[in-house]
Image 1 (cartoon, one colour):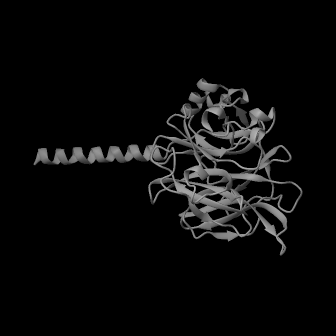
Image 2 (tube, one colour):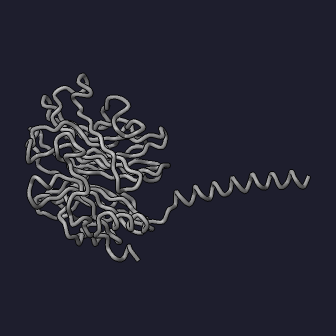
Image 3 (spheres, one colour):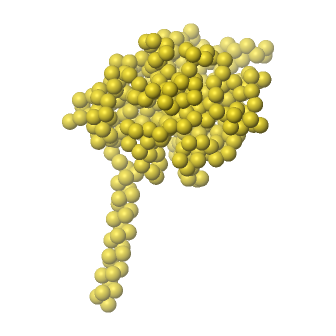
Length: 344
């Protein structure tokens, strides 16, 4: 009887330790933030490359590697340039994921781009990269594709896979729609041809999906057109859904304070503040060389004023994840530039 009780206790102890370890991992304490972006100033041939910056408070930012690229676009893209990098911390794994627009406007202009770049890392420092040429890979589904813009990745907990979504425009159709596909296991391509995910009434770009309370919020740059099809207003809007596969309920209300004004915004990205039930909706004021944010606690109501970032770089359409102090230290050792407050 004594041996049986002890054996049972040992089994229960192992299970308890495993659960505690899992909980500890899932509730990992974050101390700062990592910003992935491409640069908006300097020589045009050097702008469309991946850069990193770090902050302790999500407001004051310092560029890593002296604001030089952390990896050359020529090594990771088909076109030789990348735009709109989106970074994601993996769910239930130890990896990090980046997707970006495969586009080099200085060399090839704005008429078309072949597809997207996919990157994966186990440590934020060393990245494996691949790219997808949408028309060449899926000639029947994507003939005469013009733009494949602003990809992002989200983990689908129901499927246990990573869903990549992006805006597509064809040479034969001016409509801008969102398509999506599941990434393969090694994050080097798609399991199958992308399918239509969401079609906003007037078209949309720069999608960013955030999960909250069992639902999904899709933020994007939308617009409003008159009966003749002429756009007269644009800005950040959102659609909501209970599933990543829709249906999505489009809300025509503008969230940013600049909608209807001369100041133009794009590249919105939402991230949660560490240790708070509060979010930043940040966006790129690309014509004014500014980057600003609005606050929200529920992803429905947003502050009617904006905040500005303090930074030593000029980011274009990027994204943010939370990082630990240990990760900040690794980034410092690799590239330098991490704020002192994250190194103590």
